[in-house]
Amino acid sequence: MITPTLNTAVEAIMRAVSREVILPFYQSLSSEQIVSKAVNDVVTVADRQSEAILTERLTALLPEAAVVGEEATFADENELLKLKDRLCWIVDPLDGTNNFASGKAPFGMLIALADKGETLGGWILDCLTGRFCHTSAGGGAWVDGERLTARGTGEQPPVAAISLIFTEESRRERLRTEVAPHYRMVDIPRCAAEQYPRLALGQNDVAVFERTLPWDHAAGALFLNEAGGRCARPDGSAYRVDEIGRKGLIGAASPALFEDLATRLTALED
Image 1 (cartoon, rainbow, N blue to C red):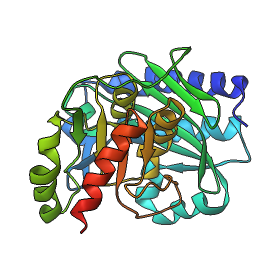
Image 2: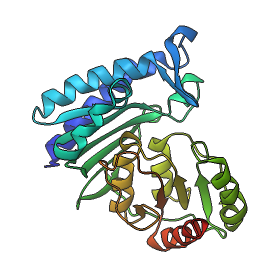
Image 3: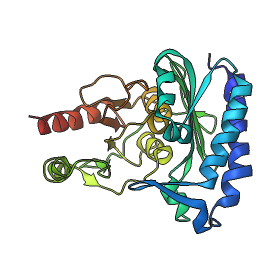
Image 4: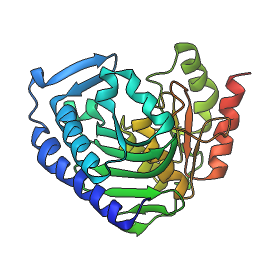
């Protein structure tokens, strides 16, 4: 399904939309072009225009696949039901919107292709630097045309980016007191298109995500696993895009780093 021709076509679409839609709005948004859609979550005119064009071009590229976009799903949650029984493009038209709206990096674009809940391929573009990551099930992970093997930082304690934004307060405090002391904590980038490459490229060792929406994690989870790291639920089960509403996901630069953090998180539930 994920052929070199398809990879090339998806990359071309993503780069064109970044160039034509996203970057022209960068650091030039008016206040009317930024709308709050939830606590700690905004949407911009760039998100909406990008998703519309991506939907049109991805549909033309693979007509048999439905498109599940972040903004379309915000308008109609039933869009998520397509993930259960269909071939679907999963589109985050502008990942890291809060950063983008504030006029700062990082931000990017995430696209995945999934069939009946299982991710087949993923594409990640850093709009500012042009770094392009892609992956396919069984086909490895690639960055700017070079095959990637995930590597940790080599630091002790390991480097952790733990998202607390969508975590309940009681659990947040236990993460701070019982898990965080075992790691060197760093700020999260608030951008999955940046966080997953950091885990594979030796910048971060582990990351914890509470909210696991498919457009944020489908491409990155497959990318990290194909690079030789590990991304899974804390209980070790695989991440599936059709597990709507399920919380909790760990990304790690190696299986050993994953197991250590998973053990600590499991202890929080006891």
